[in-house]
Each structure stands twice: as C-alpha cells, then as structure tokens.
Image (cartoon, rainbow over all chains, first blue to last red; front, top):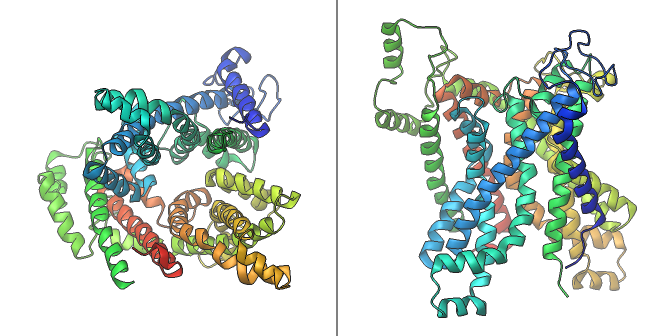
Length: 271
Length: 306
C-alpha cells in the first residue's frame, strides 16, 4: 500500500478544517443563521461583526454558509450510505449467484441506468412535501446505487473463484453468511473509495435542486439556494454570489481529490 | 452492421416503456393536483375541470389514454398554460435549447481535442499539469456556479456580452451560456484525449513511424491521434445527453426562453402532461444520442460489434 499523495492529504486537511469550522460556527460567531440585522442590510464582508457580509435581509452570510455546509455534508453522507447499502447488496448478490439471476439483475440496472437521472431526481423532489429533505435524500440515494452495484458485482465475480470462498462453501457456510463475512470485507476498500467519489456528486445534486428551488427551503440555507439568491444581487453585492460559489467549489474539489486519491491507492500495484 | 443497429434500436423500447410508466405513476404520487393552487374553486367547476382533462377516471384508464395519444405523437394539453398544447410549448422552446446545446457540444469537442493533444504532446511538463488541473476544475465545477461567475465577470465587470433582457436573434446573449455549458464537456474531452494519446504514443506502430524518420508532428497528427480518439467518440453520446440536461441549468441562470424551464416549472405546478412531455422529448433525445454514439463507435472499431 502506497501512502496517500500530497494532494490527497491537502484535501483531507481542507475538508477537516472546513467541516470543523462549519460544525463550530454557532460558537464562533454571535450571529445565528436566521437573525436579521437591520443595521447591516447587504453589508460587504468584514463589515462590523459580519465576517463574510450579510444578505439582502441582513442575515449573516458566514452563519448561513456554514449551516448550508452542515446540511450539505450530512445529506451527502446519508444518501451515499443508502446507495452503498443497496448497491453492495445488489451487486454482491448478483455476482455471487451468477447465471440467470445475475443477468436479470444486471439487465435491470442497465435499464435504470439509461434513464435520464436528473429528470428522475427532479420528479422525486416534487414527490416529497417541501422540507422533508431526509426523505428526498433517501430517494436520491436509492437512485444513485447503480454504478456501485456494477463495481461490486465485478469484484464479486473475481472473488468467487478464490480458494477461500470455495473453502467457505465446502465447510457448509450459507450464502448470506459467505456474502457478509467473506465477500463484503474484501470489496470494502473499493466501495469506500467509490463512495467518497459519490459524496460530491450527491452534494452537487442537493445544491442543484436547491438552486432550482426544489431542495432546502427557507429559513434554512443551502449553498445552491445561496448561489441562486446571490446571482440575483450580483450586480450590487457580488459577495453574495462569490462566497457560496467559492465554498461549494472548495467542498467539491476537496471531496473529489480525496476520492481520486483513495481510488488511485486501490488501483496502485501492490508489492 | 444493419442488424446490429436494429437490435440496438429495439433495445430502446423497454427503456422507453419503463421511462414513460415510471414517470407517469411517480408524478401522480406527488401530493397536490394541477388545480389546487387556484383558491377554493367551486366544487362543480372543479369537477368539470377534472372531467375535461380526464382526471376523474381511474389512474389505469388515464394511463391507457395517455399511451394511446402518445402513439399518435400527441403529448396532450398543458394544464397550466391554457390554450397551449404540450407539443406547442416544447416546440416553441426547443429550437433555442438545441442551438445552445449543439453549439456547446461542438465547442467542447473542437476545443477539448486540441487541448488534450497539446497536454499529451508535452506529457508531464508544466503545460500538461496546468491543462489537466484546469480540466479537473472544469469537470468538477457545476454550471450554476460557473454561469453566474462568468456573467459577473464578462457581463458586468467587463461587459463584453449582454446577459439580461433576451432578444431573439442577437448572438451576444448566447456566448456565455454556450461557454458555461461547453466547459465541463471540453474539460473531460481534453482529459480523455490526453490519457488515450499518451498511451498510443508508447505503442509499437508509433515507434515504427518515428524510426522511419517522420517528423514528430506528422506522427502525432496522422498516426497517433486517430486511434487515440476512440474513447472520445464513445463519450460523444453521454456528452450530448449531459449538454441537453445541462441546458436546463444554463437557461435558468441566464434567463433564456428555452424549453428547459418547463420541466421544473411543470413539476412544481403539477402540470402532468408538460412534465411527461419534457421527460419524453429529452429522454428520447438522450437515448438516441447514446445509440448513435454506439453505432459510430461500432463503425470505427469493428471489434466491438457482437
């Protein structure tokens, strides 16, 4: 196993720092995400105690952005978890049983894969009453498991031919227990690397939906809804756009670097 | 080759059927109906509206009727935009969306391949690292971040292009949307071209060409680039699909009157036929693009034909 590259380590440090600040934000600033400061409407950054300025209603942009990051990361993790659970179960079962079951299960994945994902997610977003984000993200995770299933199936096909699986079958272990105790631990590394790459995609989806007005609703903020609000005001108050746009970019780049780094380490030749 | 194409075409049918059926029933599951927004309609009028649009029938009957109409190419009336059929609404917006989408796809491939070739040519140099760094950013950053920032930079601070008050026929409005839409695809194409070209440049036939004494430029352009473009060709289908769905975002960011806005607005308004129409038109377009890309790939590389 090679060590993580410098880029990956910078990404980890950046993520931990950003996540830490986002978590600690309520104690770092005296402003809450919802409080209105009538003395400072649309104030630029570093104006008084508002580090990143305020929005049109005088709400502190730092507090709102950090709250948005907390929501984004939490929803990204939740949806990634859902897609990992479904994808691993589906892929490992298909790969292990093989034959006609495998063909049928993977044909189903192919069909769903061909559907335009964005449309399905937009329709799902309208399905749930506004504000029930956890439900929405379980749904998004439930659509996002397809690639995971393919990867896990491929790995399982390779693992099934290994001696320790034959040994487990010979010793009378039942299929669910072989899957859980022998297959899943062996695909875990790949699954974690890939899941890390799905988190930014899911964060992106949440921001995208919120940008369109279908995701996080007032009074809560999402980086997407902040970008949307900022884009309306960018001529007079560009920071309202630039602050959430920068934070979202940093978040996405850091998660992608981390995921790429983990994947590169999985694929690196072992000595 | 023809039987391969036909078989792939037939393979679209189950996918389309799943798409129609799933979206038809899922959107009906959503709470609220198309006529709920208008405040407390008298029950008699409400019943008349429902009857006029067939909403009083059981869901299975509505589904059957929808399929029957669809078979004749009729996407039904819009609930929200009175006096308009879905065919008219989408037909009015689609030309603009397609113009932006195709221009973006063209720009992405015409720009991405040379950039990737330059990076491969100078592999592991500072140029290569810089280009690939930008390409990574281009792939990661979404249109709704890039779009407003570009509008701020080139529409307000340095007003090269017009960004507000769209007038049909003035291409100045379309430059930034096209760039926003093209950027991620261009970045990905550049990376694909680079990676595949670096590999091809190490193969035996390239070494032979060099050993013959051909100038390096000729080796790259005549010998190495063509086989290296295979992965790029296979990305063509997903790229066009991406551009089509991406136009949704870009139209929202730049306030363009394309057809993309009907999907989100229709979903919020519970305008069932409009949403279904959008999903079908964009879905069929996506699937057909994927199919064409597969066929082109099979034509270029006979080994993949089953």
